[in-house]
Length: 154
Image 1 (tube, rainbow, N blue to C red):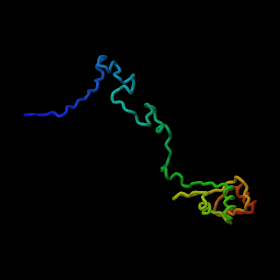
Image 2 (image 1 turned 90 degrees about the vertical axis):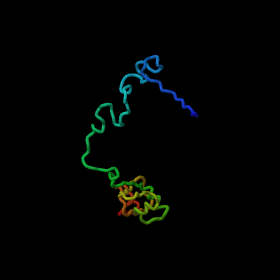
Image 3 (image 1 turned 120 degrees about the vertical axis):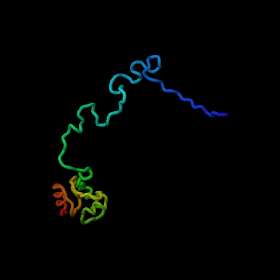
Image 4 (image 1 turned 90 degrees about the horizontal axis):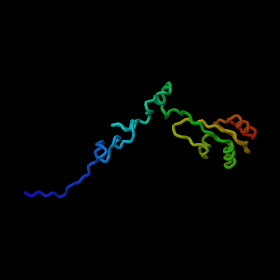
């Protein structure tokens, strides 16, 4: 009976560790460096919050009462608009009144879906034109400057 062997696979055995200095890899540390946790058998990287046996930060900090979810934390989004931008908007477009929808239409504020928005006008420069704000809150200084210029805030 003729049996032909077409190919013989050759493989290189890995060096056996810890068999003395003459083995090529060895000596007393056996290629594992110095002493300690990483030199021991079965060592793996510890979990990310592990602090070497010290009580971890997540356990040291006090726990807060109640229940909350991240996406529910901000119930209202606060947006600010400077008075100078509204002044420029009224000048360019000859507007009589400025309300929330006007601010959205001209791109001064962006409203995100499903959130409550609080828009407030803050003073930075006195207006040069009479501005009539409707349904938008403003700071005390902004209100007084708008009224000085002949406008109104309702």
